[in-house]
Length: 136
Length: 324
Image (cartoon, rainbow over all chains, first blue to last red; front, side, top):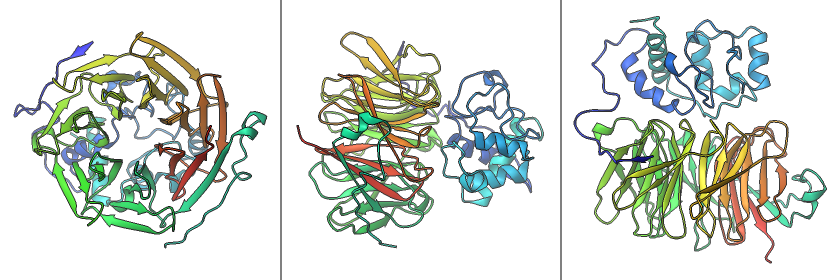
């Protein structure tokens, strides 16, 4: 396939969306931008839930045990063990893991240094909640 | 911390299996400041200094391998440098995912110059860069972006990748033809440096997770396949592919580099190891790290040296290869 180079134009073909209110739990619109750090490996699009990506789909991640998405074949043993020991993804556990993945799950194969800024993490979680239909 | 350790680690890096006993490689390691987490490394082809990105510290690292002296050059607030290469001007050029900008550091004065992406592009999550034969820098952004910067004019253009998010590693052939890999898109792509048009090239292994690319001396493109745990090669002259699974139970191929003898070097997160592949004999040599979670995310070399940053252990490694 030959793709025609498309110069970015003022049409904002990229992820520009209408401003959303900043809630106490984070700014989901800003979080959408931060999620671009994750998109090579993860999706929040239900239509892509079956797509083979390096990381598990984050569709339905809230309330799911770590390492428990049956359709994802590449969890590390460490992630599966963490789930069996009771790690369930919610805002606090996602916040901790995204902040410092290797400290929370030593041996994780998620190739990500983490997000040091607490507000960035809060915004990312707000976006994940919105993308999962938890918040509007 | 400026501690310097220079160790020949022939034993510590005892290669797996008898085949690697004759590896003919001497490994030296350099301890970096705590928390440097070196992501990418770029030895100056002219010799001497070795640059690396200290992604979590927003700095460019500068190592003098002769003395072990390390210097960190801050790149600015919110900097998170991902890739670094040495340009034809001898300067380190950085793809900074935190600044959403291309950054050049003057190798003599440490002056930092920044070319932000146009606002309309949004956050690209910049990844890696390569120079073509005309001296134009091409770059990738994981959010689905590729682009170019002409250092002579400062003109920066960004384009939407034809299959969306995923553009990751990028490299140029000896003839200056630029290819990139798309991790999320599981393909490689060739850029026409005149028109900026992209031709997507699909590897035969479905959903293989092409992560990085590098060219050998003949312009063949070697691909590290994360999902499949393979290394593959695309021959543009024949439009033909060949692939090999890395050794071990569950390989995850992250980085690829081809040295001046056309020996292929890879990193495998599954085995926590560096891997050498001789395509003539189709033989792998595995060099496990003695430390957990070495996480080598990129490899780059110069004559007789292959450099690997252990992002998980704050070390740079150099594999010194034996001359023929």
